[in-house]
Length: 260
Image (cartoon, rainbow, N blue to C red):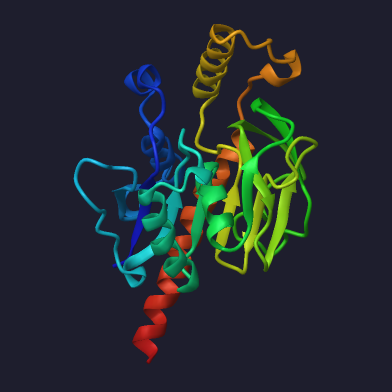
């Protein structure tokens, strides 16, 4: 049986993790929310990509993967740390094998870079809070996006972004600040700059932390429009739709082997 892997590329702030859990917990909950019955839940496993205390990560063979979700991180893709290079090398093989892959924020940027795109600091600076996003493509045949409304709100917190998409990628969604809020590469790789795994409380805690941190360093306050925070049920459903897609894809692979 193939496994759906969550790649932990970083951690949230300790006070947030203490009360709300960490990135991987939020992602796992989004992939298999409470209404999903036990028999329908996927086999999931966690990979600690940024773990520097236990040596190199034993990444699985792509043939063992039903899908891969790469979390966000407080690290920057452009730092190109050794663990990022190792993760990128493995992800490249996973993408080329046709395995469904979803990158979130840092994961979105890492996928774009390893597939030939460019990532750098956003010239307009930080995007923070709950923001409007609009679909920019025909998604009627997209297994993740076909159920999404044309316009929706999503949680964001990022300084860097995908400045140039990789060859073969198409923009799926964007807004006035970030034109590359979501992309698809070929038919198996998706990246989202926003955070479908964030709850409203998690987003508010990030807003509070960033505002306090900026004030501590003497930075001017953020425009009020950037501090909006509300629930984002439409964005959240992307994780569940990704899980459903990985199950369907894995079943097709199994059926294909049996037929052969």
